[in-house]
Image 1 (tube, rainbow, N blue to C red):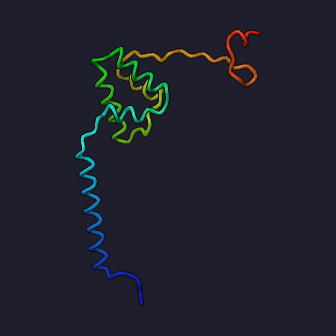
Image 2 (spheres, rainbow, N blue to C red; image 1 turned 135 degrees about the horizontal axis):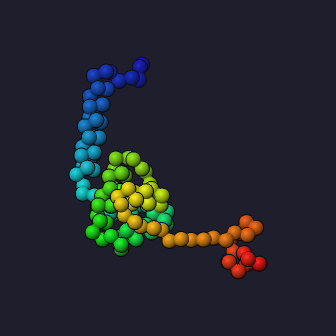
Image 3 (cartoon, one colour; image 1 turned 135 degrees about the vertical axis):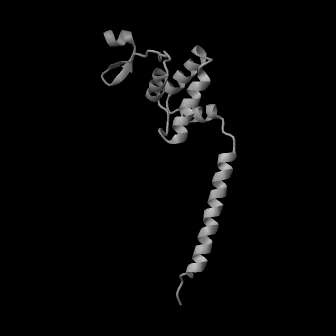
Length: 120
C-alpha cells in the first residue's frame, strides 16, 4: 500500500499551514515593540553599550533618533548584532561627536601588567 497522500489532501494541508503561518506573523507584527529595548538586547559588546549610554547622557534630544536608526537597521536585517564599531560609525554619520573611553593595556610576555611592571 502506498503511504503518499492524495494531491488534493496535500494541497488542503498546505493551505492550512500557510494560513496558520501568516496569522502568526500578523500577530507578531501587531505586538508593539519597544525600539530601545530591542536595541539594548542586540548590543554585543561593552563598547557598544558604553557608546549608547554616553549618547544618552550627552545628546538627550537626539537620543530617540539614534535609537530609531539603530532599530531600523536591526529590523531591516542590515546588521544582526550591534558592536562598538557599528554604533560609532552610525553616530559619526549622524554628526554626533561621541568618543569611547581610551583604554591602554600593557602586555609583557603575553600577560597584561601595570605600567610600573611594564617599564621594569
